[in-house]
Image 1 (cartoon, rainbow, N blue to C red):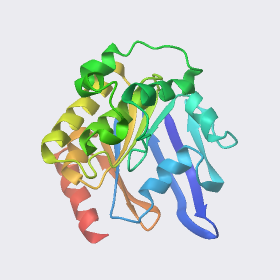
Image 2 (cartoon, rainbow, N blue to C red):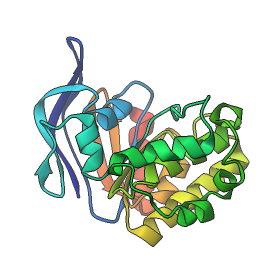
Image 3 (cartoon, helix red, strand yellow):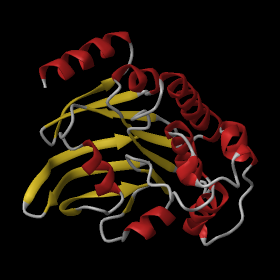
Image 4 (tube, one colour):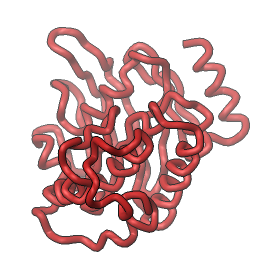
Length: 231
C-alpha cells in the first residue's frame, strides 16, 4: 500500500525529516506517534506533496508519487484530514462535502455510508461549517476525505481539541471505516492510548527520525511507552 523510503523533507533550508522509512500495509491502521515538533505532521504533508522533499520517495501501490503534485496524489487514492481540520467555515456542511468530490472529478457518490458513520453530518447538512462544534467539524473533515472513496486515509491529530465523549465516537468511526471498507489508515496522534487502541502497528518518531517500529500488542505497548518517555 504506502511505502516511504529514505525520505528527507525541508522547510526552507531546515531539514525536518532525516531519511525516514515507513510502511502502511494494505487494510491496516498504522500509528505515528511522538512528542510535538518531531516531524509527524511533516511526514503526512510530505506524503501529500505539500513539503519540499528532494530525497527519498513515496510509493502508493508500487507507484512513485515523487513527481506528482498534491492534487494528483489525491486522485491516486489518498484522503487527507489535516491537523486543525481545515473545513470551510462559511460553507455549509453539504458544500464542504461536495468539495471532497472534486478529487474524483465531481462525480456523485452515495453518501449514505458516511451518514451511518457520522449521523451528525446528515443532520446538519444545511448548517455552516463554522457553526459546528470542534467534534462535529472533525467528523465533517473525515467525511469530506472519505466521500471520494480513497484507498489510504491520512489522519493528523483527530482528537485535538475534542471533548472526551466525542473522542470515543471518532475512534469507533475510524475502526469501522477500516473494518468495513478496508481503507488503510496512517494515524498521527499525541493521545497515545487512543492511537494504540486502534492501530495494528506503531512508529515512534524523535527529532525527524523513526526510533522504533513494532506491533501494538501488550508487549509492544510497553516498549512504545518506554520510547515515548525516553524521547
